[in-house]
Length: 465
Ligand SMILES: CC(C)(COP(=O)(O)OP(=O)(O)OC[C@H]1O[C@@H](n2cnc3c(N)ncnc32)[C@H](O)[C@@H]1OP(=O)(O)O)[C@@H](O)C(=O)NCCC(=O)NCCS
Image 1 (spheres, rainbow, N blue to C red):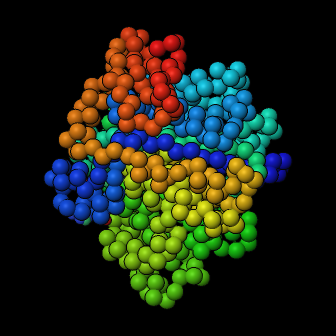
Image 2 (cartoon, helix red, strand yellow):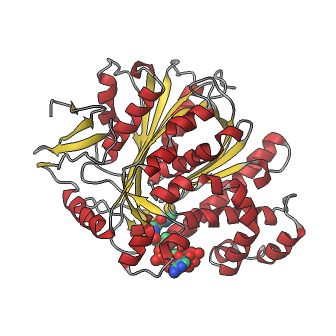
Image 3 (cartoon, protein in one colour):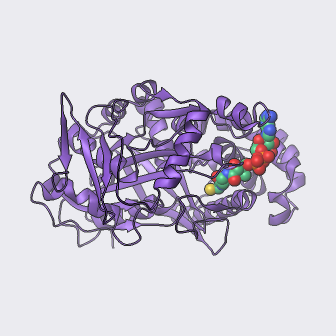
């Protein structure tokens, strides 16, 4: 049955990332990696990280408060709140319940939804839940709110430069400028051990980096084939990369995004898509007889498909890469940070365009889905969203740490993880006004936060701490 609500999707977005960051070039030199490995090899410019006063809860409090204020949404208008995160602070109490502090104050406790967790995919699960709710017969006319919040940190070693941190809040409802084409989504889910967090007293994952790359590409192929089939059934014509203006990928690091898009082009060559010219066919057809497994490890195919894909990548993917290259992997927020980059770069020309997103979470869960962009009433116009996001301003306001200081901080954070009975430095001098920060974890592991005042002083949250 068709949904009664029209144009259901994302009405507004806000991103928060810590003001503390580290240049990849400096980390590369510090780690003794060969010059260019992190910047060209992984394709990353800079990496954000939480200092000892920030965590996934403080970041999400900041993102949600800021979105509600900037779009003048009354907290009473929220009927569903879903959080995606893989950063475990508590094995039972959801991050959503911490965010309820914002809504309880206003007398709104009638809010469905909890946290969704599966590596980097939880945010997409949360978003699909909210979209489905607004499209369903149980929708009560209020907004859905989705929060993706993660701090990606790795032990010393090759994965460390693929860290990052951010929280993104998204308001969901009808008549949105960013509309879900709900029939056009395809998933691939399976059981693998590519990246997981079985060590419960450590924040660091166990990661098989190479396997995670292959799993990501396999899931991408599977979702793309499935999406192409669904499109053909619905529209009666073939789908190809040509049918969408932009492709947005979950971005653990930019090189994987380059490889992923090249993989879609290779799929289109094998599927004989009409936009593929003779030169491209000649270059890539010889690889079409490879088995799936052979093709994931074939370096010649990887190189040739990236060459063929380059002009398409520049037009359809490059505008989505700014924030993930500057912040690093934000796990659940990473895909939506890439989408925010697109809004930042192209908001003027997006109405009428189709954008395809690919969400991947290790373990593994993946979904490819389609969005249609359109003009919407103020304050939800794409240009106003881009202006409120203020990506350039936020990036410019950051403070660079040296690798030595970063490593020192990681040691403090390792010690703090899962600990109780400590107070933080409460040093919020680097934080922007209005930012939430951690002040204390008491002897019962209860966490307390304060908000940096917009003018002078601080406002405490929760139990007067
Ligand atoms: C991604 C990861 C496996 C890379 O670590 P690694 O094995 O030490 O890195 P590699 O030796 O493969 O080098 C990475 C890239 O840099 C290139 N490179 C290495 N040194 C270089 C240099 N000096 N200049 C330019 N490029 C260089 C490599 O050729 C490679 O590129 P390629 O994949 O196109 O061949 C590691 O960072 C990791 O495990 N990250 C976390 C897992 C993850 O994010 N997975 C994603 C799925 S969600």
